[in-house]
Image (cartoon, rainbow, N blue to C red; front, side, top):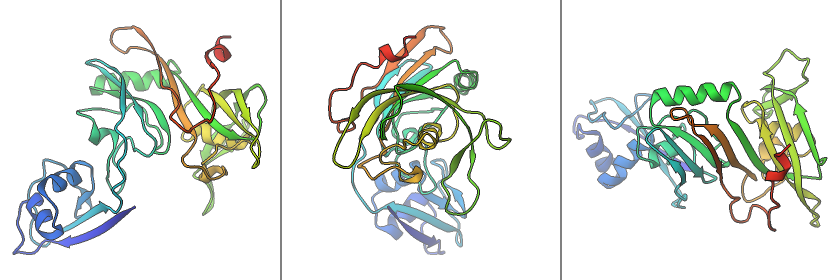
Amino acid sequence: MSKKHLITAATSDPRALLALLRARLGVSEAEARRAVREGSVWIDGRRAVPTVNTVSAGQKVTVFVAETSSPIPRPQVVYEDRDLLVVNKPAGLLCQPGRRGGPSLLTMLPGPLWLPHRLDGETSGLTMLARSAEVCARLGQALVEGRIERRYLARVVGVPEASGRIDLRIGKSAGQGAPRMRAYPTESTVGDSAVSHFWCLDTLHPACGAQSLVLVRLETGRTHQVRVHMMASGHPIVGDLLYGGPPFERLALHATALDLVHPRTGKRLTLVAALPSGFWPQPVPDWTQSIAS
């Protein structure tokens, strides 16, 4: 959660933005710089950027300050070179600053960096970042053409079939209060085509009902695809309150593997991120054999 501060710059206030924030909010210069860097400061409805350093009298400054000091783990670097950076993003960390700013991959990692794709803030796992707009465009095109394989591990409700294919279009929901996205039949004209392949790897039978660990490979990449497809199949993801999952300490969805050809060198990269602690209460079966065929 964050607290919203509204400041109207007075003639007696410092003109320098950082000095204004220090004077009106009682924060240190380092805290003021971090708020600007994380996108938590807005001037007259526009997000301030680090190059902005003056405020005129009468301008309205909005600052969002986090009310909790719980630290977010830093992303772990899995692969890095002069063109490409792949990190294991922790759950709870946004890929880019949200409406109220705050920590994100783009503000925590040294840049400049570009995002060819994004994971939901609640999802953990492998995330690609490009070190140039050119490399970002190449990676984006490879994603559109299906030349980058992405695999997720999800803890879901119930016991799915041993393996299967979900072919349902995904589009925005209609009506207030509905989930953001929903699945539509393949013959529908609503939404975009979306295909996911899944394998059931392991099952638990706790007192509250069976839960399974599934591996999902994306053939397409739509907004919330894994979440929407698993809900539509009758097996919502644990912790996914938006799409019908039961409460859990986090959204139990983890981007576990990427398989791609390096956009500049042509070298094939196969990268894996192990499940975070607490995601699944027993050793995870080797899922590589499940997708060998």
